[in-house]
Length: 345
Image 1: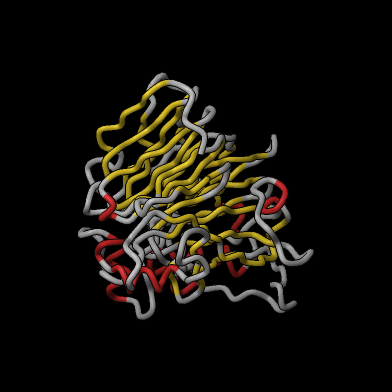
Image 2 (image 1 turned 90 degrees about the horizontal axis):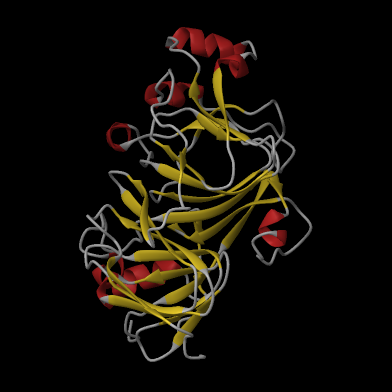
């Protein structure tokens, strides 16, 4: 690929879901093609199931896979598991209805189960109804036979641990945790690049095609922890620190930059990891590294190649940026803020 690696905005891959609604359009500003129910905007995706595309610059319109293969380690970083595949999947989700109760495999499971890929994921709640909740683990430990009987007899809901959530909550879903996002929740999800999902319960409803959605109880029981979840819901933001850690997992790290006035920002990029920038609010203008700029608004996403070395941005108003990357010691290094009205782009 002749064009030098540079920062670029993404254009999401949109997915219709039986549990979806219209918040991807109304809240997140995504352009939906029709009046159907949409559940997911894959902001950064390099999977066979779906690809986001480049949304800015000289390579606009290309799938992310083309850049992963063309730029290799210059994009994905020295620490990525593969040199030609982007190592994160980043989504916006609209749970207009309850998602299926499900579980994902981990690294050990993926090594022994054909076609499985590890899926650690983290949720940041960005919108929630007053009664919103999630399912995370079970209320008590049960055996596989007892759990299977509950599924077969339609009473698995009596085993599920429900937790109320609100905007700003963070939940890490480890592989093996039985979980679900419930109705009235919209969130940012950052995860390993996997779509391996084993459903154990789906409310006996049909899918988008009118047919019952497949359950995967046997596979789920191979990977599931049949007991309470270890993770508690955490709150992020609201501190006096401009930079804070949102989540640390074996697969990735998430940090948060929060500025409350116009400024110029700059920080260093670890060559072991690319960075995904996602704006929760406000706006910023970021240098792309090849002599141009990328404008980002609320719920926009950009990718920073690992080779880029640094990020430089103009912030004209208060702004909250989520920065995601691989599990390096620190993503945003040497963060510098220069207070004052940024130069107009």
